[in-house]
Picture: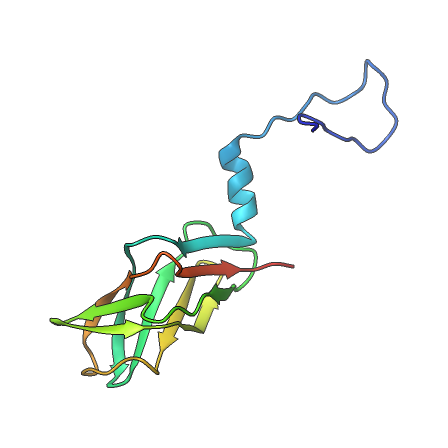
Length: 140
């Protein structure tokens, strides 16, 4: 394996070669996250806030920690009861999501097949399975 290699375009000699450009892990990670971000994977935690916009449909908005290069799409794993939407003393088991809308700094997911409640109720989305996965991608 080779590490610490830098290629330069042009003709150089020992006196004119540009200095090696070191990149921190953090800077490199931010550049990568412009194209792909893991939002949730094998994690049991709240990951988004949402609300019921009808009696049978929920929407949740997720703010991205790094601005992406374009409006992202989502990649999510359908898992039976993989997520729970807790709201107003009740809970709905949710299998998956679809993309509602997105921008380089956020995306919204919706669910309209596993939800039943009162329009206007707010709640939190909770990951209920180690098999659940939600990512966003703005690949070229």
